[in-house]
Amino acid sequence: MTIKASHIAPDGRNSHLLAVPKEAIIKRIRDGFSIGTAKDVQTAWGFDTASFARLVGISGRTLSRAKKRKAFISPTASDRIYRMSKILDLATTVFQDRENALSWLKRPQPGLGNKVPADLLDTEPGFEQVQTLLNQLEYGVLP
Image (cartoon, rainbow, N blue to C red; front, top):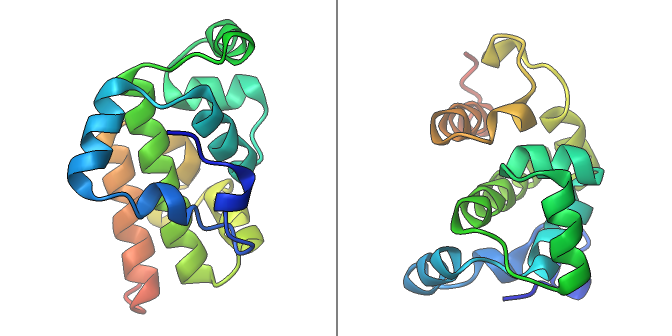
């Protein structure tokens, strides 16, 4: 599954990846996303290779090799990329603008104990914390 830049909406939403039915996305995550999908999500977030590789749990060298070979990445890294897409989509909805969403996701947030939301996305509990805070903000429930 490759997400072309054209699949990322002007507001930053990655509608192509998130529009895949749950059964299909589970299979694609287990099979591993293509490096093209990873690159598209990296570009949407504006991360350099080293930062993106750290977040998805692979080395920068492994990511670079995969890019050269147009390979698929691991299911674990694919799952993290999917979570990153979900959070960016939710944050874009909450802040009604991709740049505002990215700014929020990359700055320490008091509702997360002054942790940077993007730094928490490498684990499921961290993802859940960020998702919960965004949902609270969306509905005006301040932590």
